[in-house]
Image (cartoon, rainbow, N blue to C red; front, side, top):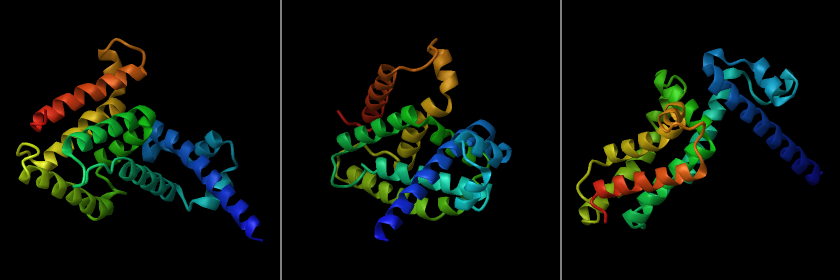
Length: 208
């Protein structure tokens, strides 16, 4: 019986992941309003009824997709803590953000689209859990400033700068490759982004 429950749980997890992956492509292509459950089912190669087994409707699917994106970001980018030296912490943070733009640009574009449209789904999150997370990082940066480890910078604007500069390579990739006269960015291109942004941002914080 226990094995059956485990197997059932694994199937459920696999099917939800398959649906969320297909939904990510659909929402990137058509946005929330234009996205279709029918097309998501076709992308996932599953009956439409299967989607409604796991998700109440398109809004529920979209909300869970956004929640998954945020959860991954918060786990992958949680290098900013008071126990770490700012040079390593900021360098690791910048690298993680750039690599996420490289490996999962759709997530960044969906998140950006949600914010551009006024964050109708993320409104409550932005005024609750997000603020709590952000404030904890602001405290870390302020502590570094007080300890003389970095120059006196505005913590909010430092974080905004890192977010915007790193996610630019996902959200505006079409513009980037046109400017670089390339069809796509290579792994080395992204390494160059990491190197350049790290140098610029650390220098701006007074870190040698």
